[in-house]
Amino acid sequence: MANSKNQVFLHALGGEDNLSAKLAVGNLWDLKKIFFWFPQVMCAGNGRSSLLSQLVIPLLTGSGGGRMTKSVVFYKILPLCFISRIFGVLTRLPLPRWALRRAIAWYSAKFGVNTGEYVEPAAGFRTFNEFFTRRLKDSARPVDSAVNAVVSPVDARVDQYGRIDGTMLIQAKGIAYSVGDLVPSEMHRHFLDGDFITLYLSPGDYHRIHAPLDGTILGYQHVPGRLYTVQDFMVKAMPDLFSVNERITTYLRAPSGLAGVCMVGAANVGRITLSYDTPVTNKTFRSMKERLYVEDEQKTVRKGGELGVFNLGSTVVLVFEKGMVRFDELSLGSKLRMGERIGVLAR
Image (cartoon, rainbow, N blue to C red; front, side):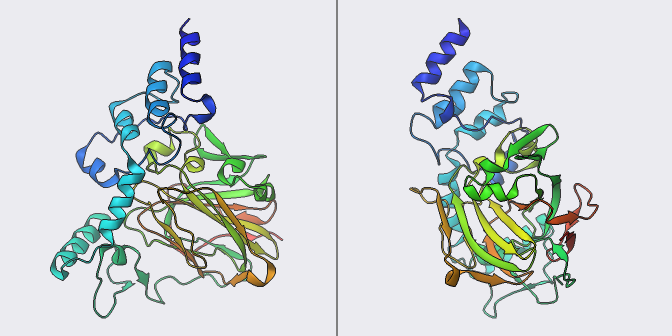
């Protein structure tokens, strides 16, 4: 009888296809963390399939994919994409120089920013976002120049890496998701049985994204979505997290095969920009868009060349064609710097 009632609720709310990804176990019931990480939900789906299907249905069915805690419920009901837009606007507002200096000093101390390696404009930073998307000195990130070296596109922590098993990538221990959901395009077929690596950027990291190898930019795909936090607790508890969040994938062709550089948005990261094109993420009204360049529009990029910018911390997932790369022995949880070798081209 209970199952029958649940089916009635599911039907009334648009069916299971309209449900968001499974809920996660969290430990965010802490005002400091909530203040920093707060954005998500209400940014996709229609009125029936957003708040109700994300909160009410899991509470009724108990099938949320994790324990229903206060922190998860709180996270699910916040209009986090909207809050991310507001947060982004605030970080782009000019501030009095003395106030911005204090904010930058506090942030740098809190999150371990190396203040000696970035380039500050002659007139100083005008907004907090200018500081956050700061450029580095030319000598700060040497790029491995070996012809066959594949390098990290970002400063980040290694979360997962390895073989794509048919269509499935590992998100965390016991949790997998589909490359076809991550890249919902015919282009995903290039990555079947290929290889992947997931790289997490913390708030203190350098937030520009670079090319992991020499190649030609064939185009990109922008997929609107949620802005769930990509903190550890959510990654380990919420299936399909990276294929639910808003993201942009750059298609990069090298002589040895095709690579995808997937920039995944997150809480407060309502804005991802590309250095070679002008898509806009986290708009109020948006739809999935894939743009494949004609031959004379395609752009060449050198290894270490800039591809895009995160406006606050998030995740990059690299996917490679089958047999294209061979990863070095990397330790999960270890830190990488942009330009550091992560593997070699295998053909």
